[in-house]
Length: 187
Image (cartoon, rainbow, N blue to C red; front, side, top):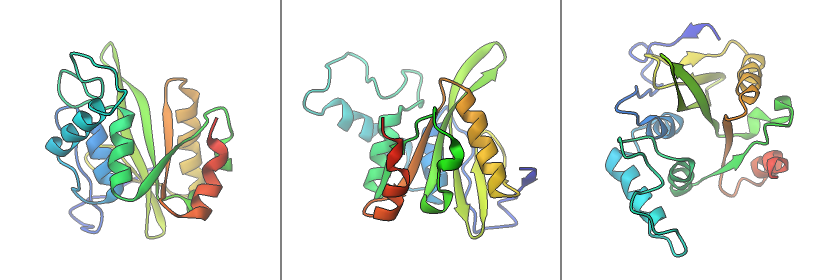
């Protein structure tokens, strides 16, 4: 994965850059290849989740940080569901080459970043556009094009080495082949 892609040169590729710790929203929009969601819409999803029957009553909304942005996985799952996609957890104990990349709409990654002396969590995504796979990381100025599928699997192996990292496999709702291809990942 050594090629960066300028979004100005290739207007077919949409890439949002990091703003105010909203990497979850950027990852979803990058995966959908359009500015589908705004901060207000993500905040509305957090309120919907907080107000669900049976949800614990807390003073602070547990689905986002007090410091703005930093949305949790539940917000991502609801956002993708509203667009017609299912997110399926990948069991990090399994071999990543068992994932059939061609059966997926995309992959959402939750990884640990070390900035200065702090460890922070960060959302990004991988998506195939045309014949090529790209890593969309809102902290980078451009998406990164993978040289091959092998490089995608190498990235996923690196993510799995971090015990705190999470991988969500995204498939279209009703895509039985895609769901079957990844359904083994449920614990």
